[in-house]
Length: 78
Image (tube, rainbow, N blue to C red; front, top):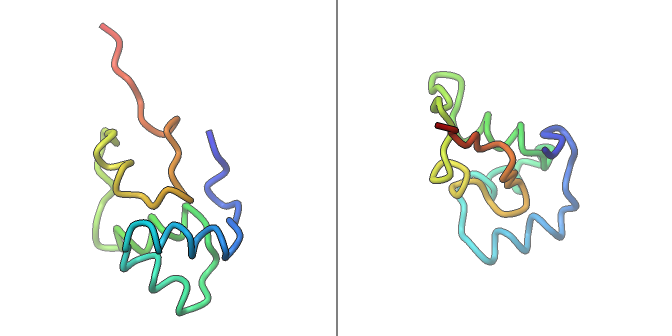
């Protein structure tokens, strides 16, 4: 699992933005916010929104590639 508070290099974030337009990531870059997964989640879901539980693959695919953590998706066992 990735450290959600570890910043990614600005170049990597800009590459992700060019590959898949993300208004949240674009805003983070413009505002000079820390380029971390945790900041992205806070900005994308906001204080008045709640992160979906369970967090699914579909939710994770909304996260820009530079912040994506495939280990964040819990698989169900039967």
